[in-house]
View (cartoon, rainbow, N blue to C red):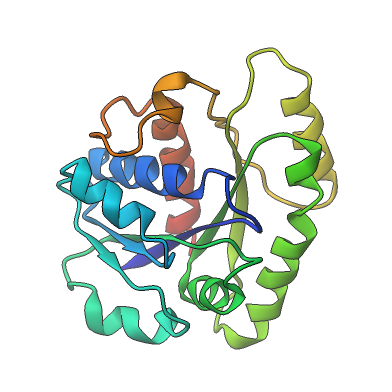
Length: 205
């Protein structure tokens, strides 16, 4: 079993959408996936019910996820995707989800507002490092990107120069994705490419 935790400092950064689409993209690649909704708001769990997902989804908004997953996740599961609450609201839950993770995916739009909050995310990852047996691999997945806009390469360069990994795949701003909540997850688009990259990171663990 490997764990991918999707996180960011604030709400509205696309964490739940990213978790949902990545989970389906992993499943499409033959992985046996479980989604863990660690956000007390329960958005991923509601989406799974309304969209009639075939991927099992459970709610676990607690501060000891890292201790409880082994006893909850079926042994047949290949990959767990954890959707987290905003770090600014539920730091304890996010810290536990980061402790449980093999790979942390930071979902963000290429804007100054979201870029300026990244130091808190990197700090949270650093804070859990002494509590982990192995280093946590992290990568940024840029979403809501605009084709040919300068913002995407600019923020990619900034983050790369700071020593952070940024996935090659980016998720364009598209209305079907923005309005996807509550429906079936079908067209995976660039999330399929992102899932392939993340699988490579998971395999390196």
